[in-house]
Length: 234
Length: 397
Image (cartoon, rainbow over all chains, first blue to last red; front, side, top):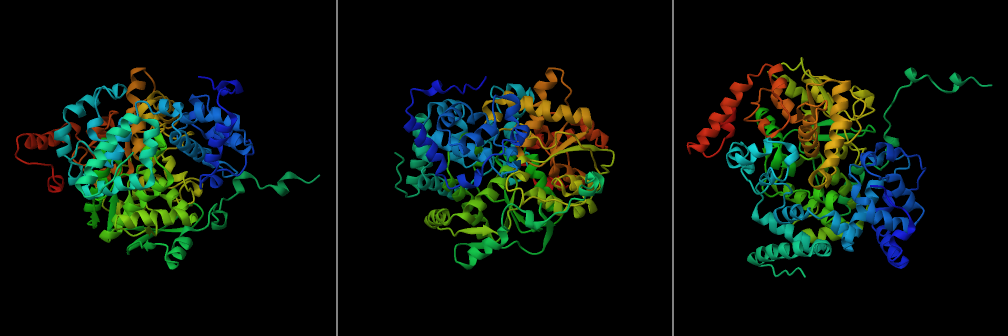
């Protein structure tokens, strides 16, 4: 789908709100390491995988931020950043910009502020967030279900049908798990939950997926309480 | 008029020389030890003996030989477990001491790059919790995942440059009863395989000289904090990373070049899970088909979770459309283990991979039917309750 850069697309959003979000990106401690200016040479675009399949340009990201073009920033924030592959091929920039890094910051701001576009981009992704935050490993063997990966062919069903046995047929003892990538100790999980608590990550989840937040909060609060921690995610 | 040739050397006479002064960042070694002197953190030393290698701008990097703490990978352990099994098997075969810990979480960076549902402090705290856990054991972290490796290099840069972030993470770790510990080096497992390649070759029992391979270097290995990736004047004239290629050459594999070597695999972090049409298209059209047309390899070798997954799994749909695909995809650890005599199913666990690898295995003289039968017999014993698990002893028997 073509990227619509006409300024009337988000005319109903006050300029001050767009500027607030723009400044939030700029205030990240990493920002000044990610943007030094732009030659407009297009090397980042040539290297970018997403630019080949979407109307997406890392050059537009760098230029827009360098020019402090708040209106275009807001359009990219909503309609472009989720196309990025986060491979950082654009880091070959001769000015040492990192358009991919800027996008990481923009995505963080989009999530933290609960933008509808971020919520939409993360639809269908909630179970992954749940898995990583609650178990400490991101993809588990039992995710290999044919209905989740129909384009990977019948071998996914074969794995799914034999999952318990094939996991037991792995020599490393830590890999006999099916619900987590590897066996993570209870103490480690508690420490991970405390990190989420101390760094405000659950507040971000609440902004983009209220249902997921409630499920995660229940799971974490219960485990933390069992270990003697009085933590409430609210 | 001044003749051009007096000003510019012809291309064939030009020589690329690495120059530490051209590195885009200051040498992290100097800074992390200075911060240790100032009481900001402890530095976890690379255990001796170690092997020294050169990185992109000619700096030295220490790679530990043993006493390694294996920081496992979500995707490898979850969906292609023969990848990490092969890393462990090589360690055991070489008689090296290592730990496969349960006090380890994911770096959580796959999720961060996919969904941004995290922040700089959380990411740094997760990294430093894992490093502190490693330090408590007296072993040194060896990072299995390319994204974890790249992300941890970024985290190191952020911590080096922000006293406020160091304070924040130090406070969080203190609440967990842990110290702030920065490893002297952040080491990817493929760097360990690279450093150990001559010892691996000494123990090689399978001839691989009839095999042609293409190499896909993982983006997060050599594009994130690019100055901390292994380069070698003997490999591509040190103009691209030597990782994987040097290992394959050491075990006698012919490495063939292709024009889109710098392109990513198409993984995309969120794309491989929720926008897979992009990943499939990119992996096949920009990588596999180009490799097939320009190099016609027997196998694609890479060194990261996402790359093996994307390049391998994406070929099924493309094949259904009659595209020019059909090359098995493996990690360098699996290739090295295979060369050292590892079982293709008990160790490499190739039944978790998708693209047909039988022609490749047969080319190196493996009786595929027999090998699969041997694996099935072990599975049957587990099914009958004669054994609980396949053990290292079973594999080595």
